[in-house]
Length: 255
Ligand code: CIR
Image (cartoon, protein in one colour):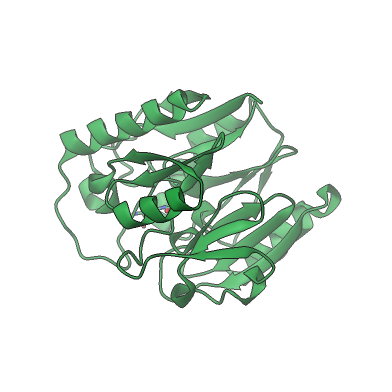
């Protein structure tokens, strides 16, 4: 299966990013750019064709492309992001995705960040968070009605996005930190709890059979390796200072 990964270069203004659950820690721009390039190399090494968009100097968070859209086989949904400062990021994402999918749009009062969307085959779990509203879930359900997806809300209590708390690992398995969300709707999956020492390590990225995990989380890497997963460790420490992780820096979909 041929995969595309849309990414965007790190903005020179990333130091002015939105922050919700972390304090501001200065970001070393050169290091962030090098780490992001390492991340892109990892994606292409794992078989994705990377479409790297130019940086948006005026939009500090624009590297986190995942939040602007949800790309399914049938349609790309542009999300109306929860942070007003981030909404102009959508324009270039829509222009890029228009070459690959029909577009659909969520609209006010609905807001949704792609980081709140956890997809497991035909199930789409949507975090109800500071960024994503119940109206967005209703609109998404209506937009996807003809495509046979099941859309289910999950309450996000103590983190930015649903995928700050859990990631789908294929074959009915989910890595998670149960204390951050109401995990009841995920009960039918095999739930893999994070090591206690690494409560913020839930955001990992499954790509072509391998799992991309930040180098900051060695115990999570070991846990997944012991479970039989192949791991690719990437250093994204500067992006983590902007509350970013490994899923948020790409939009991955079938060509
Ligand atoms: C924000 O607060 O919107 C950015 N600083 C971080 C977004 C991270 N996105 C994601 O995990 N999907």
